[in-house]
Image (cartoon, rainbow, N blue to C red):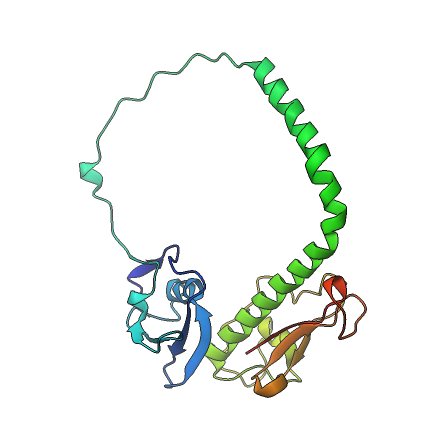
Length: 222
């Protein structure tokens, strides 16, 4: 698939789109940044149809915020300048030492006390990040294979091609399937709860569906 655009920084973070695949099926929803990455990887092209989830408007990839057409610089029009003469080196070590002292004081007073109290919050945030990454990889699998991984295939299908899946273009994860911050396996269920296509979840540090904070049950569905 020819590419004549590259991904920029989306200006409408959080806006979601449905992607119309070659089979006429709609995939997603997914963010503009993911669509632009798929464009750069050759999975989509600038004329691929999209549906804005918020408005229902039908657009193409070229209308996604952050789309930037390729352009080649005019090398012959670039100005030629003489290199600047080297500046004399006179480091002000006293100022550097004072800044370093203030930096250590700031770290000791403000940062260290928050690290202990924030570890639980950091683990919850890491679990949310892992689940978002896994969900995005599952969407890429479906875009290529026209189905979700089966229950038996599980999340391992994101790293190793299941037998009889010719459309697989993975691996869809750069590393092996992660474990949650409490060293438990993430749970993949298909179908998901309440009519969702699938669910990826973690049962907190205790392996149970209850509680808050580090004991919260965290789940991502589609």
